[in-house]
Length: 615
Image (tube, rainbow, N blue to C red):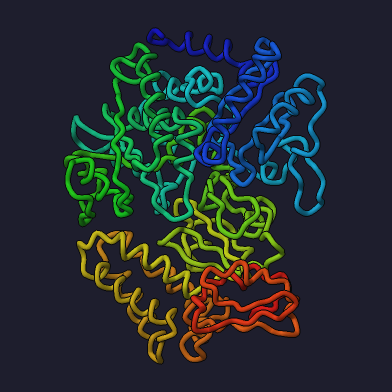
């Protein structure tokens, strides 16, 4: 492909509109995100291709492998356009029926459509499924819609027109002002004003400046950045190019963890395509502006999500935070002025430039503008990637978008903000997703990981899990984080093992704030948040563990003692067949018994008993 001009961009858009508006033929959109790849979408695509060829439908039907559709719990899945017919949890055996019944005869395959868990009714159109209907897409506007490996598809959805506008119709100062007007705050966790960050870098002296994209995403339960890169890599590239134009930078890096092979593959393809079209490199779109991007693969160190540690890693040094000031906008990568934003932040930029900062500022709340992407995981029906306006309540997010708690279990808490966040109880579910509102209840919005927990979750064990993660990921540079988190973990492990003693709660309460105040970087400063929030809202569970030697959620194995109630036992033998240690004694038509000397307390019998005979 030759180097493009704006007129050629417009022609590509016009020529490819049918493929993104689904106007000229039948389109089968198969989810090609990591989640669906893992559940068999690659095999389904091969079978679809073979079936369509065998029935001579190549001229009438086109298969498009998209990035992540978002509804991970329903995968592998396909959407048939026009009509947005949504088929879920497919297997190879379903493909022939879909081709014959739907594609050829025009009749939806009822049994494969989405089934609403509340109404039990089948819903044909993706647009009518509550998971999708309650979202507002800006950063995720192209998810499940385009081929992420085809730059023409991206251009057809107004791709690179935001950059063209910033290049030919705006001066760098105007770009920065537009971003400031939008109120966009960094989506990587800190929530700092994106426009202010860019302004500091623009005003910094120096001919060499850098634009960095943080795709190091390391929070447990988080997959926002990975999914955006897999579904719409050009949106991130375009955001970076606009940022480079705003601060007069000629070089950018995308710091992406090696554990994201599909994201790296599609990013690499996108960069090569953009270079080939003259959208990266020298004299972009025939102007005097030049900018290029490289991918730098991180080794998975959580601390490298911190901006200064990330920069040290790119420099070839050990990824460890440094003191600030000086801030990166003045002295960042190789001591040059640098801006760093995460994947989601950059994915918003082109739409702000195209539609205006005021348009974006009209969405959300007074202090938290626009939309936010969340990765819903844990004990929730609709596991997946969603985008909602800032100000949406946690209750709406969990129950209307997320579909509530499965298996008729009760909601207990939601962990927001990853290891640096906190656990929010049921009584605070009406809290809006807003940087300040979430901070007031003891958590942070963070990058968007949202882990839902049901009644069977032990909050002490949950605090232990996050503290174990933080302690393991601490770079060790500063003593408060290195030694303080180790001490917190020791106390939590002791409590979960049934060895807690009076004074442990007070020790946690006294030590946690000190770690936050004395640590060097954001990892240590927020490390104790899971402990503090669980102590604040679930202190009774700590008391039960320490003083009564009981785990109310029945999760801490050391505090469990399994007993079979002879009055409830139905003599079915299911527990006997499930027990891995042969600790259960049972004969046909006889009540089962547990040999406590052999019992390893694995919970297998407790989980499998349908009659609640095991307590």
